[in-house]
Image (tube, each protein chain N blue to C red):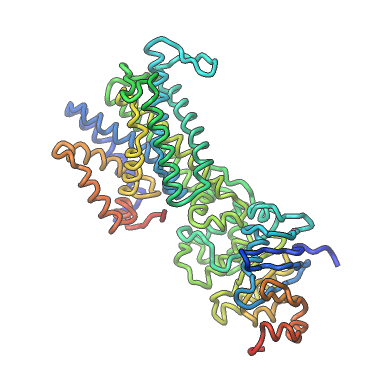
Length: 249
Length: 327
């Protein structure tokens, strides 16, 4: 087994008396989708924010491609190969769809300090941006204002922006959030193929999607990982059933 | 409804036509008024980079306007008294050359904007407004107490500074010079809006979290916008001082910072011609209504109120039927 692409070791984070993250150690291996599930308030968002760089853990380390990134800023982690998507779409609503993916391509190039030439002048960046739109099926909407997109299209654009960075690991915060049955199915199909490009750490509420996609699942309850294993392991784990899947499993 | 491109050309054409008409009709004062509008527009074009693109509501842009003014005043006063300026052991000759004065004004304002931006950008929202206001007041009171350069009374410069190949004392020639500078600043602004930097800055205003996750630093983008913005407003300050041949601490006053914001809001925040339309309207009202009543600001306030309530895109938004960026 090769080294994990992304790993946390003994991550802890408290807010006052509340232990939002307690000794969390997870890893993301080459070519897999590792889902993190847990009831509301289990600390999924806090965990994601620590991995992405928005929150600094009280203790523990985060490794990306074998490098300690615990003290790096969000933008440095992005440059190191972490591609994040947001639970609530974080898109420039006043800009066009194409401009949103161009921003990703621009960030990947690391050269935003150009004041005179047009943002459309760089052919490589534009191709990267268009290719990402093509892959999520938004190519026809490229000139639309992002604010005019449907919710489902915004979710697709959210993923497209992450694609432009050609990340080494994806960190996806509820990509199915708010999608209908068909939208969810479509996104599931897309993410299924994506794992071969870069592994995905997937935080998701949609259990059908999680069971369909995940190679491994970790269950987070009250800030702790109570179980990690294959889909079948988790389905049959007594502690998980008690703590989380409960009545509907 | 009119396309924004046509509106822009129309505004520039009108702004050029008025002084030409005044020249033919022998109304030199109108040329001076038009020059004043052009210079205020330039100052606001500068602020519009920080405000419209970066979403930075700076209530301290008079700092850069004043620094530009004092850069001109200090250099020219040393030139007219034939005494060199002693600064940190350096001996600097005064100058009456506009290009040198402009460059000085731009560099000093940019440096000040960098320092002020570095501290102010740690805050946002109302705290950012307050901290920029505080910097403005610091410079204002410093200028008042700086007796070597006139203190509260300000500094008079007897002859307008020179520009190679022009007689700057002829009103229409000085207007032409200022108008050309404004056009250059507008061209820069237009290119900026369509550039990679403009795209990243616009995104940093709307969704800073997104900009971080694509590997860019929203703070650095905003800081650079603030520096560019301050430099242009500083240049406008130097031109304004030369128009009046007078510099005083009022160039640093917070009322001026406020007026710059007001005229951008009236014209259209983040729109290329927003500051120009706002400045023209402002100067026109100031002159005509100011001649009727000294309470002309009441009318300005009423216009501002109507715009804010019913036309968030300002006059440009109203005429083009397109709402501008939200700040």
